[in-house]
Amino acid sequence: MKKEECGCCQKTKERSPEEYKDLLHRLNRIEGQIRGIRKMVEKDAYCTDILIQVAAANAALNSFNRVLLANHIRTCVTRDIREGKQETVEELLDTLKKLMK
Figure 1 (cartoon, helix red, strand yellow):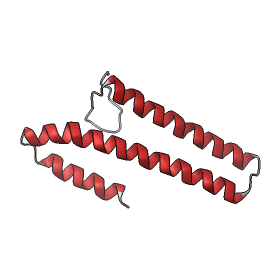
Figure 2: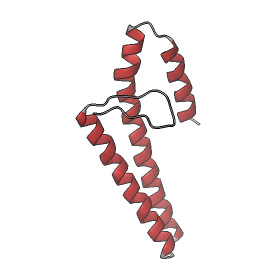
Figure 3: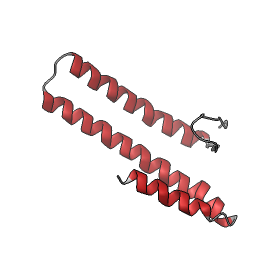
Figure 4: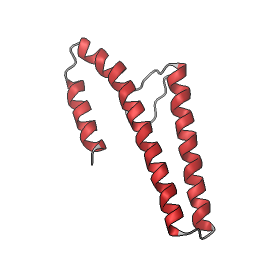
């Protein structure tokens, strides 16, 4: 797929069409879950029902993170280590710390 600058970082990643499609599919599902939660709040749904849907959205986001992290390790991190870029290991460790908060 096409590399694009996101404005939030300097690095970019060229993804395979399959990875790109999978990530966007997951994000679209999560976006739909969030819209559903909003509608539940707007319709004064019962608290427990909303909480269960929020838990499902959190699980979907965690799953997205796991897939993205695994792809990152298999591609970017592996490549950089082979090229002798040890700073990538530190970057990965910093990322893991942030994900585990």
